[in-house]
Image 1 (cartoon, rainbow, N blue to C red):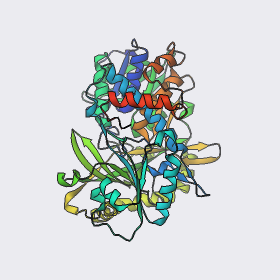
Image 2 (cartoon, rainbow, N blue to C red):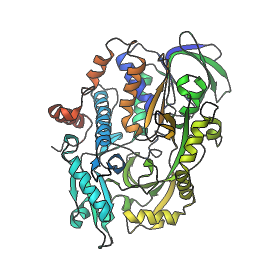
Image 3 (tube, helix red, strand yellow):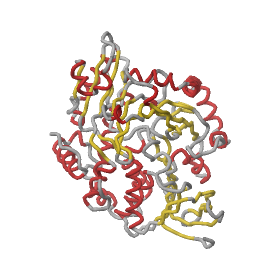
Image 4 (tube, one colour):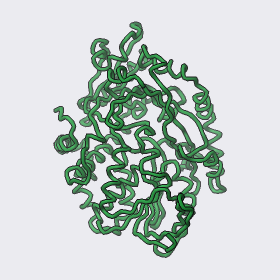
Length: 493
C-alpha cells in the first residue's frame, strides 16, 4: 500500500469502543467511509477479550464500590444510578441491532445471571443492609432482595455456604435480572456487521504518527507483516486502543492531551478447571475491596460464559507492570512521561505511594495466598481445582483537576480536540458495559454539526436517550420488557 489513502473516519484499536462507534456511525450516517487499524492479528484481543475483562456486565447491581458509605453512615447510591442508566443505553442499542438483523444469536454474547453482593462481619452486614434499603426504593433497583438467613443464602450460592463458619454474621443481596456479557464475542459480531457495511478493517497495522492537516489528520501507518509504511488521511480519528490510547493521544500533540498521564494496573484471576465445581455456582457475587485496593480489584466469584461454556473465575488480584497493554512494552510507562505532564505524574506518585505498595504486595502473592482469599468466598476451595490466568491491563487516568494536582481517576473519560477532529477514550472501570454511552458522547461532541438530525436518529435506536428512566417508570418497564424479549432474556415481572 504505497499510495495515500483517504476515508472519512479512522478508528484505532479493534475493541468494543471502536466497534460501537463504527456501528453507531453506520446507522446515523450510512455513507460514512470508515477504516479500522488494529496492531494485533485479530479484533477483540486486548481489553475487550472475554478473559481480559474484569467486569462483564457492570450494571451497579452488585458492585459495592459504586455505593459509598458517607460520614453520617448513609449510603450514597447516585453513582450506581448513573451507571445503571448508562448500562440500559447499551442494552437498548444491542436490542435494536438484533431486531434489525445487524447482529444475530444474542445468546452467544449475553446470558441472564443473578448479580449478588456478599459481606461478612457485623459492620459490613449493617452497611449492606443500609445499601439495600436505599437502593430497593429506587425504580432501577426495585427487584433487589436482601437476606441474612443462611438457609436462603445456601439456595442463592450453595458453593459458598458449604463448610462456612457459623459464628460470623453474613448477608447478601440478589438481583435476578443481572447478565453476563461476553464483550469479546459482542465485539466480533459488531465488526462482522461493519465488514458487511464495507468498513475496511486492517489487523497487524500500527499507527506510528499523526500530522494535522486542513481537512483532518494524516496518519503514518505501518503494516507489521510486510514492514511497509504508508499515509492515511481522515477527517476524524477515534483512538480506542485501551491502555494504548494515552501514548497515541500524546502523539497528536493537541493541547487537550497535556497534563494527562496514566497509571497501569494488571489483573490476575483464579480460574476453576474442574467443571463439576464450576457448575455448582451460577451468579456474579461481589464482595468488598480491601483497604487501599483500586476499584477494579473488588473480589468476585464470577460465573462467565466463554465459547458457550460455563466457567468460574475468582479475582481479580491486582498487580503492577509498566506495560499499558497486555501485548505492550515495559517502556510504556516511562516513555509516557513528557515535559507537559511531568509535574502531574510526580504529584500523583507522591500521593499514591500506598497504592503502589499495595500493588507490589499483590504481585508477590503465592498461589496458596490467593487461594486463602478465595476461601473467604468458597471455604472448600482446593488448590488443584484452580489455576492462575493473566487478565488484561488497565491504565488509570492521572490529571490535574481544579482542586488537585495529579489526581488519580478511576473512571473513563473522552478527551477530544477543540475542533472535534480527534477523540480518545482513556481510563478503565466501568468500561465496556457503558461503551454505548461513552461513544454517544463522542458522537455528540464531534459530529453534532456534521450529521443532520443526529439526536433524532439516535433516539430511534435508543428510546430513553436524553431521559432519566427513573423518572419515567412506565417507559422503564416498557423498554426493559422489550429489551429482554429481543435479547432472549427472561422477563421476570
